[in-house]
Amino acid sequence: MKKKAVFLLLAISHIAVAIYAHNFAYKTYVLHQVKDKIQLHMKQAIRTRQTVHTPEYKALIDEGLAVAPDDVDLLVARSYYYFEIKDFDSSIHDLQTIVTLGDKADPEGGRHLLQCVIMEVASYPANEVKNCYVQSVKAMSRRRAQKGKIGITRLEYKDMLDVNFVTALFYIGAPTAHAARIKLLTGPETTGMTENEKLLLELIRDELLGLPFDRNRLLDSLRLTYGLPLKNQSDEPLAMPEESSQ
Image (cartoon, rainbow, N blue to C red; front, side, top):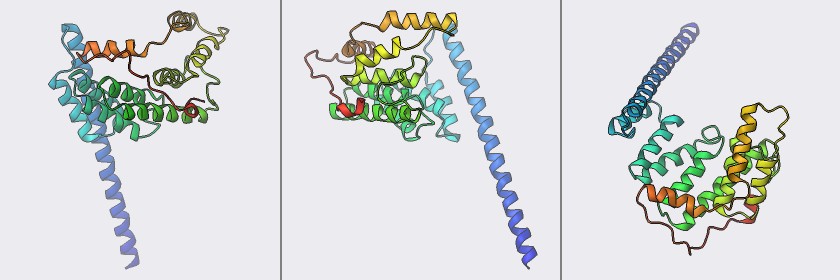
């Protein structure tokens, strides 16, 4: 009886593994098919100068998310689709889904920061927008600390986590933002850089160093694009708790 029980358990485990392997293979196949179709759709749209964000495009994304609801690439694509059609709530919801998936889904913090920017552009309540930015900066600070980077130390222009971190400091109006930008852009040594890396660094320096950061101008460019009301220049800027930027 014991041998039969062991044999039965082994048989069940083999069946379970086989089912899992089949499901995984099917999921992988569907995702590859969907992403290939999305790439083809985008190429055709560019070639014919038509909008990428069509109902057919969203249907492809939904097809992929049906088998892989946590696929970050597809969630980002759908978020952009919703943003383009001015369905800001849905766009923010997909970005929030990515944030809740943790560090692996948003290692550089850009998707969390984008969520905050869309919330602000879409005129979400100021306290919700401010909290989003604060949580975004705190999450990026934690990830930077895991790399041994505390506060605004060891900022590297080639590390997108650092770039997003400094950008978030400016959006929130942190007192350390300008000093962080200078460190980000003046710290790198050019020794050992390729010519392309040197050109990129010089371009970033020329574009950003010494320029005042006008958050309303940047956000208003998005508002104008989507026909949204411009921000009143007399509105109070968002203020960030000092401890979040240190």
